[in-house]
Image 1: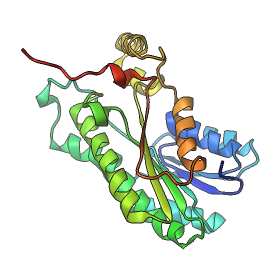
Image 2: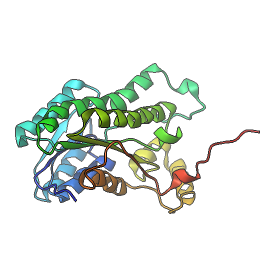
Image 3: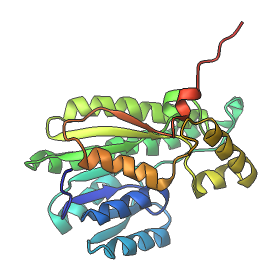
Length: 263
């Protein structure tokens, strides 16, 4: 396991959910962390305080990763405070909850907004940290938080699934382009228990979907923010010869998603 003590991590979208769990897990490993939020300043301060209880330093910073200037500012803030950037977790994401059959439920602005955060934002953040990581003797690690939606074509809407598919492909491209100093990998969670999906689907549908996913997974489990954070940490501190890989985190649910056959 790679020693992360006194390393520096930027975790985008880390005021709640997977990002918050990841920031706090990294703090337990001795990482100083940039906590990023777009609108949830209270959540970011709560996460920052929890990280600081582990004896590390934090920055809680408002930034919209769809804006390149904000991405550059986050990288500069980390460098100004600590002089290095070792880890980037591209977790910030957005969607619109629209049934896939409802083609009129999405327009070009929806696609551009979702791609702006989920794909372009991750690219811009990687570009912002790349010079510092390339200059370091031991380089750095980038982990993209994609989704099984990008592999199976399911999810909250067609635009979201397409954006996560693009994120998986981008992981391959960047892994080739940025080695040997940077390792770039992706995690693909399935259904994640928590407020994001509950708020999007509503209580009744959320409970039904969670039960369906759990019942149809070989492990009879759905992902949580904490289990996804564990997978992210694996790519950061685990085998240092792994890059361009995608890890599905869904209790094996994807194994039951055989292609439809028409007769």
